[in-house]
Structure formats: structure tokens, C-alpha cells
Length: 386
Image: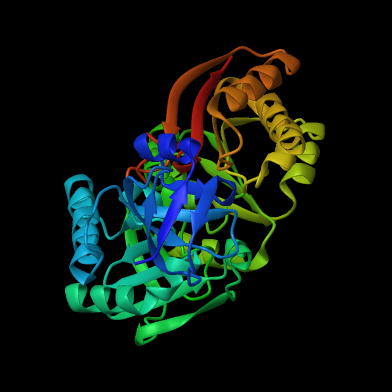
């Protein structure tokens, strides 16, 4: 196995159990194949562990072990079993969950989502992509699934020199998969749906949101109706806004699956529709904001902050006194403190008083590796607005 020497800065990161080593921290190596597995050593040759090597990404090394472990099929299977056991502790009867969450499961750049007897995988680095046949075999042998589908359309693969591809890699086309989430049923297209078919990171937040359902509800960026379906069970009326007509078609189908006839789905730009609702004097008892990531890199933070400020300001103005705002950001680069400051500024500008009822994060099947802040990306805040 090739050996890569890294500097003291990288040694400190590895000692803290951070999984990434940047190209600028490599101080010496022999020939290394793109996507290969290498031993990582400190400046004096001391062994730090093993890593996946990328020839193109600025993240040159992704640590897969912090000792002298032999990296063979049993090693990978043991990591899969460990991830499985953690999910079984949290979700013994869940029909859909993230089985492997990359670095948090010490399987960097690997995503595996389970939907009943189907699996969706993403291999987001050169090294993990080379291991894709192994992961397909491990999943097939252990779970005997109906289908394994790869959803490797993520833009990050271009930084690794990898093509953006999707399709069935094992089994047969499962068609639409119907899962139960909390008290609602959802139909999911694993091959053509967003991400891996459903936004699993918001699962527990959607279920929790149902407890706030009452009166008139506005669900912004509803996608395929996630929050709207849960809230509609206890609300009088729900207005759900989404810019994608295709997503709304699925949302309407999901409402029919649950025999919910109190949701009005509207195809519109959320920013524009919030302005129109405010001008018309509309008011809501509960508003949900679940926008896409506005800040996908550090350079976009300032513009993202303006976007988050605008939609939250407009939403707060639309709330009845004592109304509830359920608002999220899925941008890692938007810190929790920064997001809370934006909400405070929006409340101040709207001349309203807001109190935090809950601070939530990504569902527990997306665990946060405490040594890697990059794994903490979803912030969800529930406010009571006077």
C-alpha cells in the first residue's frame, strides 16, 4: 500500500478524528493511483491510519481508519454492520432512513439510503467510486434487496473527475415506492426523484411539525408535500407553494394517498408569492420555510444571508399573533449562530417578538460527527411569534 506523508497540521486534524486531509498538507509520497487506498504517515514516518486518495479534489485524503487495520472486504462489511446497528437502535421499525452517512459512519463520501427493500447509493469520491462494485455486492448479499439504485448526479463528483450518472445497478425497477412516515404515507420515485428520492434529513422535523398544526398553514418550498401532509391532519387549511410543477404533481398524489382534501397546491416562486400574500393582507397561524441551500460555498454566504433574511421577514409579517414559524437552513456554511441572528434581525425588522420553542437538526440517521463540523448542516428552528 502506498505511503503518504503529511505535515503537523494534518497530524493534529487526524488526532482529533477529522476525516479530511487537504492537498496542501501532503509533504511527500510515491506514485499514487487515483482513488487508491494509501497509508498515511506523519512527518517522522509515524503511522496515522489509512485513507482514500483523490488525484483531483482539494480534499486529497479521506481517512477510513485511524490505526493499522487491514483494509479488506471484512473491514468494509464491519463498517456497514456498525452503521446498521446504530439505525436499528434509533429506528427499529422505520421504512425509510439513511443507512450510511459518509464521514459520520467512517465511510467518507459514501451515502446509502434504505427505502423498504430498495437501496439508493451515492459514491462521491474517486476512492469510494472505485469501491462501488464492492458496496453493491455487500448490500446485495446482506439484504437481498429488490433493487439497488445509484443516484450519482451530485455536482461534487465533477470535482473528482467523475461522471454524473444514475440508474439501476442491481435488481429490477421498483416503480414508485410507498413508505409510511409518522402518520402519513408518501409515494417516492427512487430513480427520478430529488436527491435519493426523498429528503430523509427532515423526517423527524416533519413528524415533529405535526404537533403545531392548527388553523391556517402556509408551507413554502413544499417539494412533494412533506410538511404539508403532516400539518394538514390537524390544520383547517394548508396552502403549499412550490416552483416545480413536477414536484407538485407528486405532492397532489401524496395528498390523495392520505385522503387529505384541505391542501391547496400552488406552483409559484416563493419569494414572489410571499410578497403577494403580504400585499393582500393574508395571515396564517403556522408557516413552514424549508428552502434549498442558499449557501453552497463560503463565497455565497453574504447573498444567502440576504435570502434567508428576506423570506423569514416576510413569513413573520404574515403570521397571526402567537403564530408559529418552522424555519430551516440546510447550508453547512450558514452556522447556527448566524441563522439565529438572521431570525432575530427579521423579527426586529417586522416589529415582532419571537421566542424559540425548539432548536432541531437533521434526523438522527444523519448523525453529526463531533470532530467534523462539516457533518452538521441542517438547522431547524421553531419560533412562537407574538
